Length: 428
Image (tube, rainbow, N blue to C red; front, side):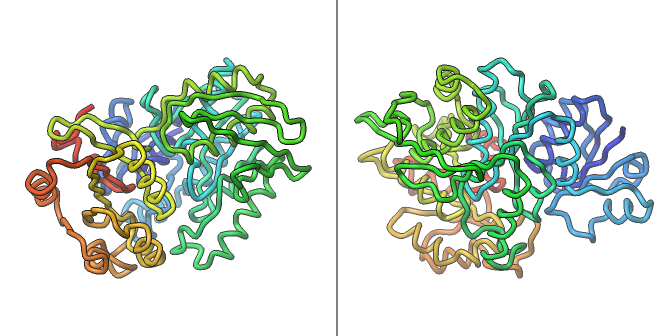
């Protein structure tokens, strides 16, 4: 089959492109932002920045990202030629039908790490799982794995209700907060979509009511776990009713919020029958996901962190972790807002989370939006009374002149990390 993906460089779309290509299909695509195109081209996937009527005409199936509007040139051509057009969610739903058991992880935060943790445990269990991830594994340096057809571990994105095309054997909900209101309009609509997702699952592990001492799961009942931390922040998981310690863990991922991701991953794999000693091995050997509080190389600053956080709750966790890891050090946060609508809809939360921190705002990553859709980084900077940089040159000048003694924490889901790598400020 020949596939043409519109918006191919997006993290989830690129994973699907690799997935299709490594399954024996011919794949090409287009994107206005070519960050990530090198990885695709190394895999033999052709990527175009502008419309390509010839490639669209060759395709058996055209796949369109949720970030693409109906006015896209390639999509117009596909419609005119009456091509089979699938959304990203529809394609993932079709691919998932090839697997005996689909484990789908949804939620406002933590789904990438939780998905990757489940995959790593199943890999340690030698069941050769397949993976579709909205991030890049630090160890394998990939966001997809084509394994056997027994297990597919995938992120399940709620945007445009993409996760409703899946029929999971196990569905995980990490948490639910106000998010993607440009699509859902209200939090109530978002909650209804999550309920539909859970209704599509044979088993449900629901962390959306996750408290410090227990987790609820499964439509068929509830199983609770205690979490105990020691002085070094290692932790153990115990069965609450039987008061039996299950496993003690020393994990390599820094943020304490990942403890709950570990519990969700434990739950999934225990339900699949993976022994505790293998689950322990999988959790402790996990190296993390790229740009999830990742310490990166920089010749100019001793301590530089890149974190994908773009929602106020995620940012709050990142700030807490940075303060804990870099005690008694001055920390500067550089935040690139992701979409104008999110900045507007969650303005009060952004004001609260950035109170009393040293901050620079970098120009908004618009993704699918226009400035008129919400609030820009420039306007947010004026509201917060902080520095704003409209381009990389002005940001570099500000960092070297005014902040050369700081720990740098780059936050956001935009293109700033890619630009920093391309300009050799950060290095692999």
